[in-house]
Length: 222
Image (tube, rainbow, N blue to C red; front, side):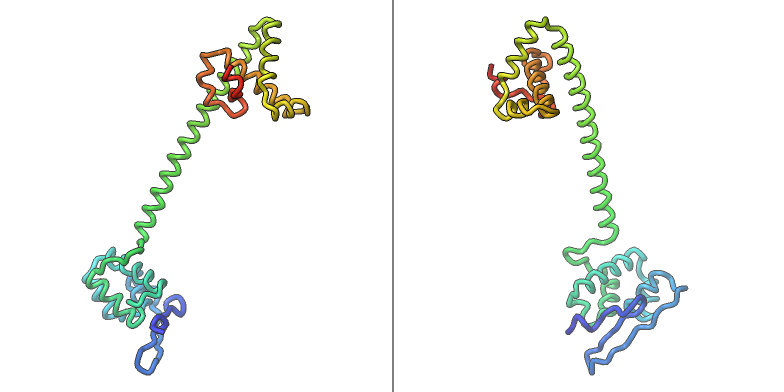
């Protein structure tokens, strides 16, 4: 198949299959002393002479960009590189071909990652600030609720506690009857909600409370 006429054998070696007679040839491996861009061109089948001409006539950034595009085309088995891949690479550099649709170079990928990281950091910071503000609000409301109950005479406290428990839903009543930690937490949430109902100054902020401190629907309707 056309896509099999040019394939990478190993690092530094590419297998080129010519149309006539299907003869195969292996490009020589460049030495370690070669300049990185020259070595990259040779590894992709460009002749030493053509590589020198390209390096002399074009900016390194341009060559590097087209090397990335070339590798992307090869990895996607694009027909453009199926017949004469090295020739296409040389022509793309000389003609400064536009990058194909869907291609993203290394620089663009890094910019995308950087923007995503910045966005994540901003979102994390917003969540952290919101969490801290929520903790401060809940702490201040908890202290205000405790002071409210402590300030009540015994008879009034008993009346409001009874009112709070009467506002419980069937599920809350079941939890209280079972006893244990859930019963204590449920009972306390009912008492807190009743306190908020009696304290307009902090009741307005009850929408920002944790679910345990939300006002029961029936209490809000009274």
